[in-house]
Image (cartoon, rainbow, N blue to C red; front, side):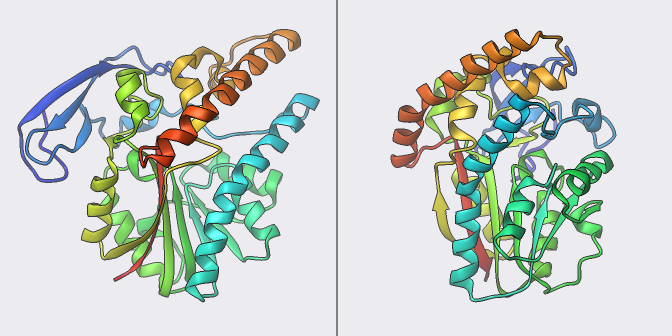
Length: 314
């Protein structure tokens, strides 16, 4: 058992066992443990940097199908992503800064495309060459293939750096956040979003909560953990948002029925007739809609299943 990446203590309390429920990349079982000293929740044994890529399917990002259903799904994704776009646009307006928007871990680039349509200069950063190629060919946005610690972006050139569901995957979140700080203009903004381990969904579902995502999520941050990490890296949190229309209801649905999750079915290559695919998609969407009242209420109580934070340099 390794030492806590937050405080270095070796004492742990085992919360539960878990395996890859969503993508079935491995039959291996892992532990989700809580540090006895600082209570940071993490995966054990932690996959090494060499081992971790095995748990990411080749098509881990969203790729729209060129069908009627695919076009409907793309329209839905654009609709729910407005939540993210509006959050970032407000941050930029209130900062008064101008410059580049850098989206770290941009996947297929739909968010970047929507931000560019709002009139902003954008650039993506993505470790997967296939995802970077998809972002260029499908959404026509420029993407650099690599990691943030060695990116070619010039220091103090970014008005905004965004990281949506990135930090929980990293062996070195401190290095990434310090690199992001160096890239920001003096009054620039960092936007991060993570699954919230202090949410009601985590308490309700435990090891079955979609936000745990064994074995890809190395650390399961509570809100206080993430705010402490940002402060340690030289940031001041100035805004918080507990509800994401894209993520909170869908996370609930995937926790209840991972076998209906559309991306998981596509990634796993499950063969389905057009009718069966439409039926499963409809059932999944029904779960998402049904989850809306609960996810809105938990977010209103400050316990949403995701937390989006806006921060600036101290």
